[in-house]
Every structure is written in C-alpha cells, then in structure tokens.
Image (tube, rainbow, N blue to C red; front, side, top):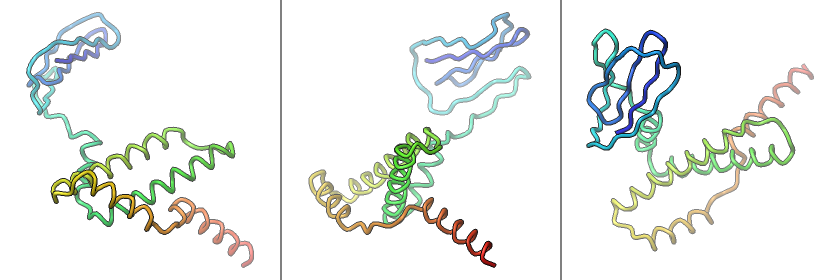
Length: 169
C-alpha cells in the first residue's frame, strides 16, 4: 500500500492508496512523506478529513478521457488520430523553426494517440480480429489516409484571412 502524508505544523492528512479510509494526526513535519506498505488493493479510494467526514475521490482525468474515447465510433477515432498526428507534425515544424511552443504538448498528444489506438485495438479484439489481420488492416488504413492540414493550421489560416479582410475593408 502507498501512503502519502501532506502536513503543516498543526495538522496532518494521510492519504492511503488502496485503503478504505485515511487517518489524521498532528505532526511538526513540513512537506510530503511517502511510505510504501504491502496490502490488498481496493479500487475505490476514500479520504477522511479532520472533521471525520469520508468522501470518495473523483475519477482521474485519464479515466474520463478514456470514457469519452470509448463513446466515439471507430470512424471518429480514426479522424481524431489523423488530426492529432497532424498536430504533432506542426509541433515538430515549430520546434525545428525554433518558434515558441509548449513542449508538454508532445507528450500529451502522443499519449492521446496511444489511448485512441488502444481503444481501437480493443474493439478489434472484441470482433475477433487477430494481430496479423489487424496489422494488415492498419497498413491499408494508413495508405488510404488523405493528407489534409491539421485543425490548428486551419485555424491559423482562417485568422490570417480574417485579418487580411479587415485590413482591406
């Protein structure tokens, strides 16, 4: 079990991963204390506050994104993969041109693409499509992709067109 303590001079709150409740104690420790213990894992995590109320921790951001992805059709997922890969290409161009960009966008987009492809593969497994056929279908799908500008580039082009129209008017 993983135990995380976040404390201030007067209070301490311990969050236990895999435990059904947490404890509160007083401490003079200023910072974060992490302890690792081995025990059975319980999927639902609860937190106990200093007033004694127990509340359930909300779903993580990744799980919420996966829920949204699973709600989409396979065609929508394919379109989103194409858009994200176009965005990654634009980021690489910005990096090579030494323009300003968020470096965290690389990791975020790559992970989003991986999540989408994972859901797509899960659906193929449910349909009984084997690994070999899946790779063959994936190669065919990649060949059939029609190159188009990514959404961020379209947005930039529209903004530039609007600026030129405002200047000429």
